Image 1 (tube, rainbow, N blue to C red):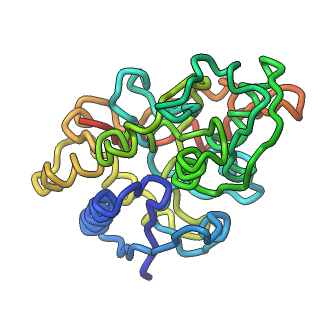
Image 2 (tube, one colour; image 1 turned 180 degrees about the horizontal axis):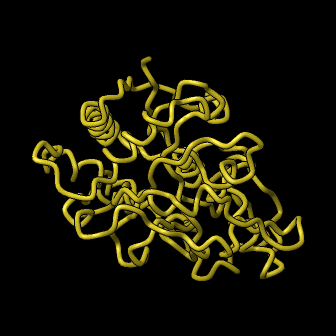
Length: 284
């Protein structure tokens, strides 16, 4: 059975998308599990992608993964290499303004317009709400749903909003692969770290296929046929350092994640995240 692969969440430029496609092709060959890259571009909802029954490897945001009634099967989580990630599969939201704006502190934007992506997004909505709730912040308007980080950037540069949320890994990919756009933005504050979106397979995918995909993504030893270095750098994959970590990256079950100001307490990791197999992706 041919399974679908998708990296829409982190295919930030056509070149990076092509590199993800090449990486998935190598994973399919190494695992012996047929994967076909599925285009699912915005504005098509990500929920429709995640509900498919034929996903073999697709990025899924942690909040919908942890809160879903029927769980997808966790394969691997990227570990971005910049120092701020601390060598862990985590990310944050960079609250960005136009580089040429006069804003110095986040509080300078209060009373203005803030963008948001979609309600199920950790980086584009929930992390932002929690961060602002701690400050009793007030904005005149929440502009959205903007759906994608790219649309947040467009809204900022068009003067439609004063501040907006960017997935920090998306932002780091842009800094490397589209520096001319990144140079027009400035981080004014960042939220706390939470678990990064992970690669998942559909619930009905056979256990044996899932195990082989995990092993291909997270080998305990170097592979002689590993993807060429140019591909790894293009999609910001640091493969060499992956060989120096254990096959699995253990995430503490009791670490509270995905807090929301609209509920008391915090959601906690699903058991499946405890044994998340870590694929070291990041900036070389």
